Amino acid sequence: MSKKKKKYYTVWKGHKTGVFEKWDDCNAQIKDFKGAQYKSFSTFEAAKKALNINYKDYIGKSKSFKSELTEVQLKKIGLPNYNSISVDAASSGNPGKMEYRGVDTKTKKQLFIQGPFEEGTNNIGEFLALVHGLAFLKQHNSDRIMYTDSKTAMSWVRKKKCNSKLKRNAKNKPVYDLVERAEEWLKTNEYTTTIVKWETKAWGEIPADFGRK
Image (cartoon, rainbow, N blue to C red; front, side, top):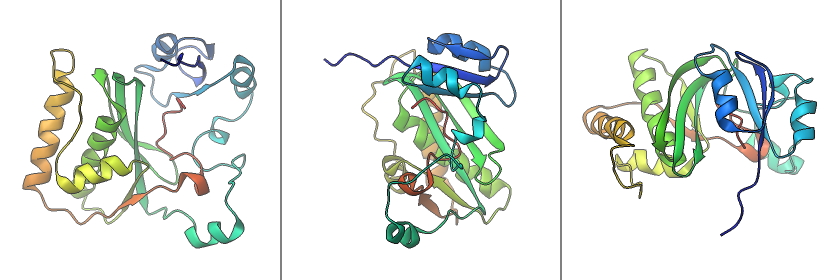
């Protein structure tokens, strides 16, 4: 079994700012803090350096992001459609603490967030984020499209079924309660929203990214 790589967490906005060596310490600073800004790094030096740089340079499409694709490939893909929302999930461990959210693609304004839940997986979170997004857009009678970086979640939504291998237990009951509600929503609602794969290699991290990579 490969050793899990250590991560360092930079908090730009939170109850306390700085660099934290444990996710639980980072989470304590951002939990219940409106507009929290944070991201993980593989080295302490990178995390410390990032603290003195604008948060937006690390999240989503930014000036600092340099695509490795060719000009021809980038031209073929084009730019994101900003008449959209973007959704993403994050899980500390697989399974582990999981949360998901949706944001305005252009402004990164948070539109909804759920979690963190005690036990879940990234795929489940991505699935729940998509269904939440579909319900959100339908409720607001919006014609915006929705971006996700998860092909798995897109497949599950098309099938109207969360095909996770995570076994149900008392710890993840809140998550599976949401999964059941999401599956029921898909079976009983029609929607016109187009779900589109976010082109990470061309545009950088999806704007809804939680910054734990």
